[in-house]
Amino acid sequence: MIIDDNIDSETIWNALYHLCIDKNTSERIESYSGDLFRLSKSLQTWQVSKYSTNLRFVSSESLQIVRDYWRRYSSADNLKLSFVDNYNKAIKKVYDTYHRDINSTDTIATSTKQFWNHGTFASSADLPNPLFAYSDASSRFAVHQDSNPLAGFHLSISLAKLEPKSQFYQARPVGGSDLESAISSAKLQLQPGAMLFVAS
Image (cartoon, rainbow, N blue to C red; front, side, top):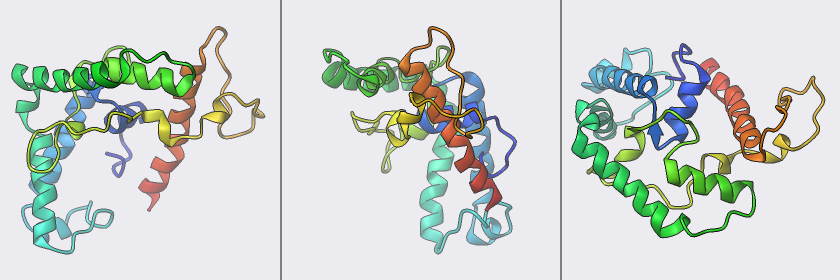
């Protein structure tokens, strides 16, 4: 999705970082995964695809392993009621076991609790993200209980008083919380990395 440079950054953020996603993101993942699955029938068909310069495979075996993930990501079964129910139960189990009774004392703790309680930071996301649904050769949910989309970003810039000319400057909305500011900051930091990937 990033390679094609025709998807908004919000959809990329949702696909990469949310356990539960909206309909638009779900459709994009299904469509792109289906395309990748069709283009990866063999090393020869893959090497003539536009994606081969960014995603290289050295053997047919490794291509087939990844191709099987693309098949599962693009499956209509990901929206079946039984799949959705099992997926949501797995998220709830992690939340109930590790996060429900934790008193949030800082932005990271608050965001981790919210993330596992809802599977997302978005308000309109209730579909399973197939990118998180599969591990090994099964549909076993295996996301670590301490996973948090914000953990990989420099959140201090969300609180720092930056100059308006800084690429990471964001005017903080009146009444906005530290968590909302941290989420906006992380999304802003994702954009240059995605653009570098497109340019490579």
